[in-house]
Image 1 (cartoon, each protein chain N blue to C red):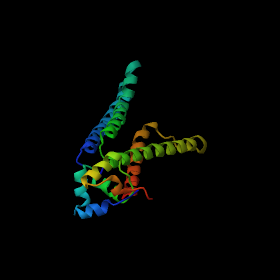
Image 2: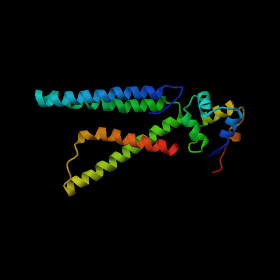
Image 3: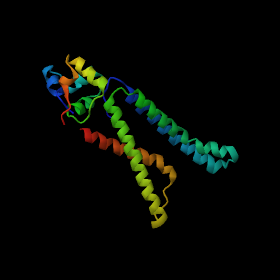
Image 4: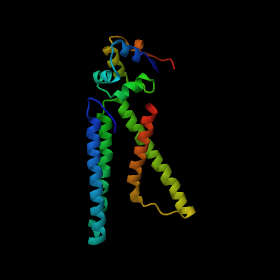
Length: 64
Length: 134
């Protein structure tokens, strides 16, 4: 699944570790999601959307 | 197991797993010497034989507990995939080895090597799964 996580993170000037800390997950999790190798669960997707004050659809697209 | 998360489920799991592995080693030695030197009879044989299997059963339960406790989806997925890889590889290796034993006169694989073999293969599987997500 494609996503805009890297862009959103850069806009906040956060490192992967910063984002991981805010989400209470490992940095490896953030990296795997960002690179599209791992799709987050719905609760984590909601946490991301809340953190960036946007919608899940604005972060993730179902394009391959 | 590499992980830097705010929850400590993975560290609790690792610590407890190490303790259980040490317990397995101690119980294996106790059981071996008990059965060889003491030469017990009836129920004592069973008790000594079951002793090293107790930490293995506890390790399986511990793994299940970790999977339910881990809040990081990715870390949970990595462990589950590693365990699946380890189980699959153990089954493949032991099945192939069994045929080699029966029909190609290979050396008999000591069944007590199964748990260490499984752990090694889970370890290899863990490395491969992590590399896939790097």
